[in-house]
Amino acid sequence: AFDIPARSIQLVVDDETLAKRKAAMESREPGKVYQPLAPRRRRVSKALRAYAAFASSADKGGVRDLERVKGA
Image 1 (cartoon, rainbow, N blue to C red):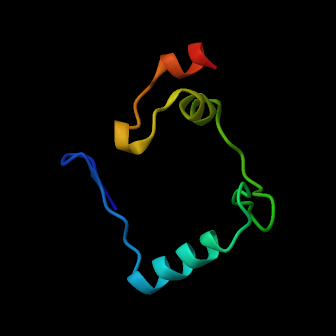
Image 2: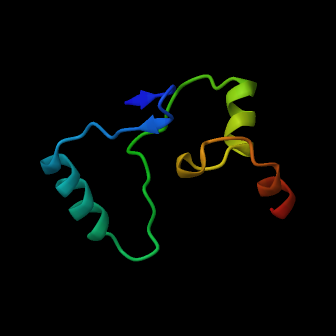
Image 3: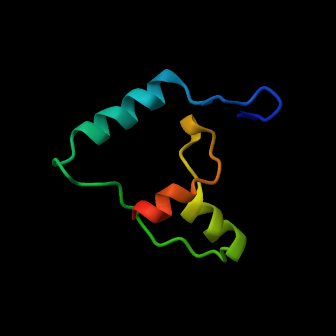
């Protein structure tokens, strides 16, 4: 759940689901990353693509980080 005024993000997933996800993640070969089962079929706006390219991670506020692009 996102609480914008409080500037917080709360994961609303029960402990059993988290434990299953963690076990599945840890059972993968080292270096293997998550891959969806099927490609996502959706239109992504230019604004969302730009945000994804420039945004920092949520723990840093999810704000534009132009240094990410300069350093890439």
